[in-house]
Image (tube, rainbow, N blue to C red; front, top):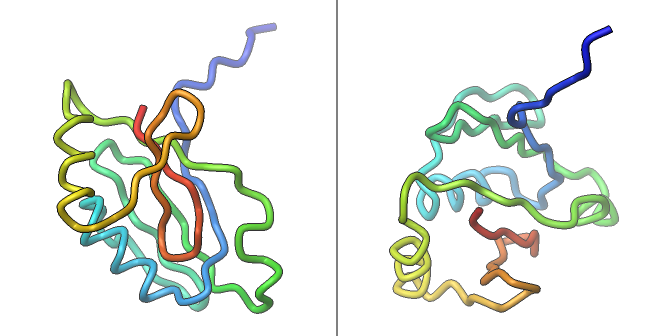
Length: 113
């Protein structure tokens, strides 16, 4: 029997307080592209083909209730340039473990690599 070898993620799903505000934030600040919309969710595609799914929370207790953080890969040596872009957009960076991390509008922690 073959062992499972997961190569990458298909999507990460998170609850958000304002689905349009969150989608616009990811599109404007991280260069994601809206892939599809259906009812209470929007799927955003990363350049690599991975997907971030934003689901409209029906209860504020859902927001931030299960996801610890999101790690995103960048191509080549882009991390410093990306962090500088976030600084220029006044997005606060905070050291969390070995990484400089930042938060989206709902407080989800994100870091590169």
